[in-house]
Image 1 (cartoon, rainbow, N blue to C red):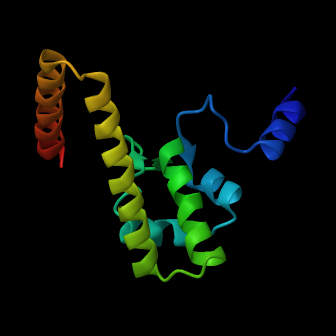
Image 2 (cartoon, rainbow, N blue to C red; image 1 turned 45 degrees about the vertical axis):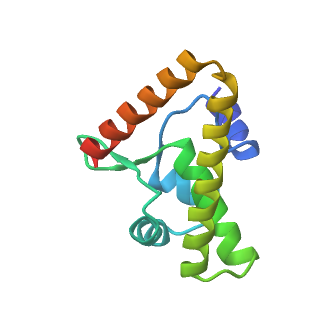
Length: 131
């Protein structure tokens, strides 16, 4: 049974069922050394692994996707660290803009639109408190 599970992990290393990955697993999946992952964590503020009670880095799927995106930008497309930071920032802004547009389209009547804006402002306040 254990062999079957390990062979599945090798075929499809990113599981949709798992919430967290340890740094060794992320290293194995991405082909990057752990010290590179720790360095990127300091350079790219969007990579924020959760550190539980054991202070061990626990990467989420979102972090893993970002790491793979950064790896592609740096190693395949030839971006510098600064260029990759800018590209990631631009992609985030574009995604945020698209999300805002979708919210406005869905809430086209006045009350729903005002309600969504109030929720957005409240969430911004919560995010600011958490930072």
